[in-house]
Length: 259
Figure (spheres, rainbow, N blue to C red):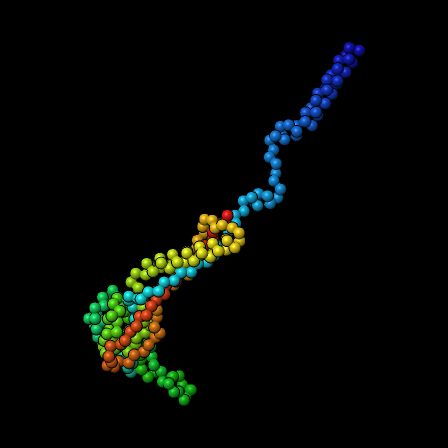
């Protein structure tokens, strides 16, 4: 009997402990766990709170100025029955041409060979079925000359023609230091972008904020090219040359924040 009562007491105690544990588990979400958890915002709420409104515009700037230097390609083309004879003739005329260029005040660093070629000349009419017949050889030798004083360009062209040059190609006008012009065009491009962005922000009932991104697009250096010209070696007065104006352009893409 005593043993039975002892076992019964243990069962009652165990049941009481189980009930207490169950009550503690039921109360836990309302106490410690509830305090530790942070409420999860609804989907999209965080993204909406962090959204940055922006406006992107393009800006264009350009500056016109008178060039202060030019480059021109001059050369000699020779033809003879043999390659050796064509080359000898071309070398002689080219040496005279280079001497005239240097005597005109052009430094050696401003003279650079741009093309040298030797190729066969074929008979134009071929009535038979045989391969075209070689009737001679042609030699081309050309140099690019940088003329740092435009006042001397006309007389230099006249001198090289008299010296035997029969090729003058691609006169290009430019600037010794174009950086200042590019800086001016870049400044104008940024002002143009800001003007556009301010107008768009106002039309959208907003205010223009700080710049978010800037990217520079097309940049056109100051360069005007006169198309290829062939000149025959003959006496002529000084060649009239007009440099006109060159245009420097810069384009930018700017993104501003909106308030």
